[in-house]
Length: 344
Image 1 (tube, rainbow, N blue to C red):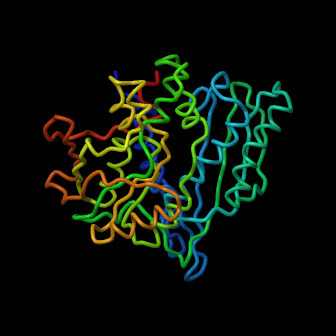
Image 2: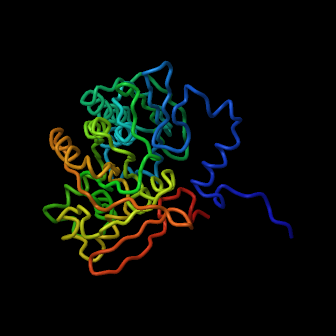
């Protein structure tokens, strides 16, 4: 019996993205005004010299990205915009406008939708983002939110994934694992009554985009950056592949919140490295500029931690090697969340 056509499940999320990009004719996916296209946190459009418009879009689908027995509509609105603004932060862009499209069953109370937009609006107002329109359609099998955000950069300068060089410092902002720990608590794992549990749940439901930090990283000359949506083990390999380099990471230097370690003493490292949805910034910077980075991030009220270094790629290609916490050096295989893996 012959093999059937290749399916989306077989291609996987990232394989599908690569195939769809190739399916577009060159004239539809590249050009002098498209500085960065498919494959980074956001696209960059340069309508004229010295100007750059950064465009990103994200979807939240019920049952995949959110559950209404875990979140309220206010928090859902906040998160729908926050994950897009996090992509702009990873490019060093200033948010300007966003559009919001909703897929609804039709039986939702109007007050729930008002709260959704109150959550969107509060974050939009705080970050200088204007909600410019969108669309509403019927979605009988579950709700979905689709947000597109546009930002701009100063002098057309952006952060991108492909600039890491051997000798650079690898660093992250904030702490890792809080969002994954919060989701685990919502799923019934750990002690939901613990004093620190609400902080972890809030990290999952209401992430904060690191916009000021992203702009500071542009100013001090960070070489590469992206936001942590798929976890350190899922996202760092994307920078390494784009930059054609390897990295050595000291697990003993990972900034993990004390609450994560306390509530999940057996799992905290896995939550911090594979959990995802931290929406912190992962970046590389020349070692000679680390003191500038440290000062600039403190000036905008952020914290950053150096967790490793960029090293040359091997003959076999980019590798991520980890060490520390009592273990020897070992290579980590990429582990990004794939929407189609295990589906069937």
